[in-house]
Image (cartoon, helix red, strand yellow):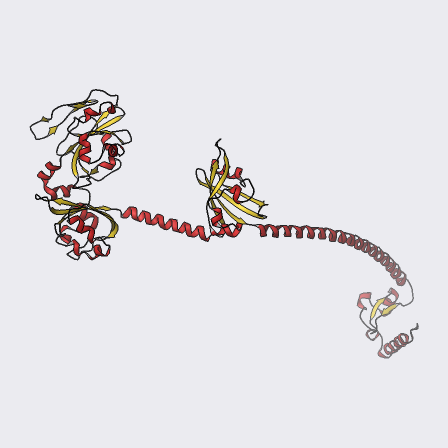
Length: 520
């Protein structure tokens, strides 16, 4: 028997109990759909996959093994069908198959894979792959009975990379595998003998009834919960977010002999979801509490591929504060209609931001609203842009008033400067005239002093207390003093006898009283 592109040879027994099945390429056109009936004659399950791991063809054995219809299989990826049993899942399974070219070899070292079943326990298979040009054929050998017979249920479970526990027909833990112990941080002895139906946490989560359904022979997928397995020794297990698959295992009589609980640890993804949810909430809180208006937009393109409008997708409360437009009216509306302008405001600027990815900043007076706005715009992704804006109308009015006041001040300063310039010019003229007068007075004073000093008569000037203020040279010589400076500030008492000095003083008093000249 055979199928397109391969010739099937009989198994070879090499004497060491290792069977080998070889498939040899006979064509490389990859057109498996040309002979689907040939695939159906192959006893082993065969699935053909493309370079992206999608199933493009299958045979009847594959449909029986997976329990899926041909359409369902051809719509699936290989990674969706097979679950590694004896090694951790790492990336797309089909990539590892593509690396294993050549003959199909099955032996005790070949990895096992699970094919989950809708009804009943999963099937265990070993797989090999063959090159078919642009396609690959995956041949799956059902070894479920062989592995169960050679290893027993506990041996199979212990090989699984999935954390697994086995409960007896009344719900008591009887076995857990090493992956279970590693996940929960407990040993087999810590949980063995515990009755799962007595678990208070399971009851609080509302999952006890689901466990009873599994004990009654129904495969049950429990919802994702935050859970901690119970212990009989008092050991503290880790708390993890898990999804649990409870699968019944039938005994020889067809009744449920035990159930297998397979745990999927989703703690990391749950924590990531919580982190993202918290981050999104922080964003929403910031979005709602910002004093600046924020609007998220989507460009609308015409038949020629050019932007013709944009739609408002979301706004924050400050948007309504600044624009006066309620959120209900804004979200979903076209800008050309919403803003009453007939054309979308600043479409060319926003389209350029979306096209280049470069943010922009603008300030503008929007006539339909009679408001001024300062707008920052950036693009978060293709076809979309976000505007962050604030109403700067009052600021613009204040700036205009300040500019007007500055202009008025400059005008007044200019006028005052002109007045001061005129006053300075007049003052300079007065100063110049005064300087000329002082110079003339100085000349006259020098002339008078020269005249006084050359008069042979005694000439002096006193203050009201009879102290000398000025003397000519004849008087200085008369008093017998070397210099006029030695006399200034002194009285006749310092140079004459007291009686004569008193007479001089009396004469001077009389002259002052009578306002008449006198002679000494």
